Amino acid sequence: MTRRFTLFTGQWADLPLEEVCEVALDAGFDGLELACWGDHFQVDKALADPAYLMSRHQLLEKYGLKCWAISNHLVGQAVCDAIIDERHEAILPPDIWGDGDAEGVRQRAAARMKDTARAAAAFGVDTVVGFTGSAIWHLVAMFPPATELTIERGYQDFADRWNPILDVFDAEGVRFAHEVHPSEIAYDYWTTDRALRAVDHRPSFGLNFDPSHFVWQDIDPAGFLYDFRDRIYHVDCKDARKRLDGRSGRLGSHLPWGDPRRGWDFVSVGHGDVRWEDIFRMLRFIGYQGPVSVEWEDAGMDRLHGAPEALARLKEYDFSPPSARFDAAFGGGN
Image 1 (spheres, rainbow, N blue to C red):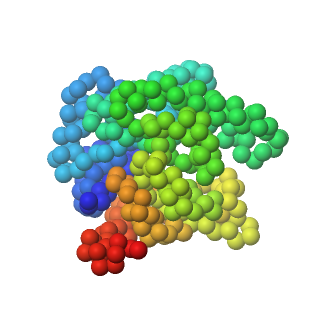
Image 2: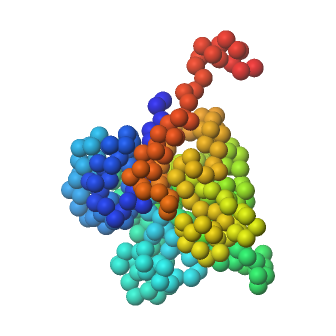
Image 3: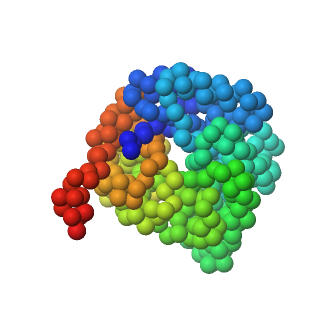
C-alpha cells in the first residue's frame, strides 16, 4: 500500500483553508489533517448544516486532496486541566470559554469533544487527534511532594471526564488518538501506560505518535512505537533538536520558541535529533497503514519552504516493504 502523506493544518490556521489546499497541492501532499480551528473545520457548523460538510469535501476534491483525520487539540486541552486561565481563553472558541468559570469551561469543552466525534463521523472520518489536558501535569516537578493518592486522583479525573466522551466516540464508530505530549495526562512512556489502564484499554482511546515530544525526554521513539503498536492510530511528524550545553536545560527555562538559549526546540523534519529511518522501519514492521502527517513547526524557518522540504525528506525514508520474491529467496527472513 502506498503511504499517504498529509499536512496538519493547525500551524496554518491563520490562512483560509483554500490557501492551505493550494500549498498542499503544490508541495505534493495527498491530503490534509484538518484542524478544528480557524476556518478549516468548524464542528458546530458541521453538525448544524449538511451543506457545510459538502463544501469541505468539494474544496478538498477541487485540489485532489483527501482527509483521513481531524484534530481538536485546543478544546480537548480544557477538558481536564486543573488550571483554567487566560492561556485557555486565548485558544478556545468564545462559546467554550463563556464566562471563564473553570468547571463550566471543562464541561463545555467535554461537550464539544463529543460533538467532534459526531462531526467526524458525519464527515466520513474515523480518527480525531487531540489533547486531553491533565489535572496533575502541574505536579511534574514533585515539590511540594505529591502523594500517590494525589496522582491517582488525577488519572481518575481523566477517566471520569473522558469515558463519557469516549462513549460517544464508540457510538459514532470514531477513534480518539491522544497526542502524547508534555502538559497532557500521557506525556512519556509510563504515563501513557497508566492513561491506557485508567480507561481500561478501551479501543476508542489510542495514540497519535509524534517523535518530537520524545527525543528531548530521552525516550526512544521507535521503542515506543513497538511497545504501543496496537494503539498507534495516527502519526504526526515533527522534529526536535537538543542543545544541552551546560547552561540550557530540558525544561526550556520559560524561553520562547526559537530562542537560542533554550535547551531544546522544535525544528522542521530532518533538522533535529529524530532518527527518521528507525521510525519508518518500525512503522513498516508494526504494519501501520494510516496516514503520516507533517506537523510543521520551526520558529527559525519559513513554513512555505519548510513544509515541502519536510515532505520530501520523509519520502526518502519511506522505503518499499520487502518483496515476496526477497522473502522467498531468503526463507521469509529466517
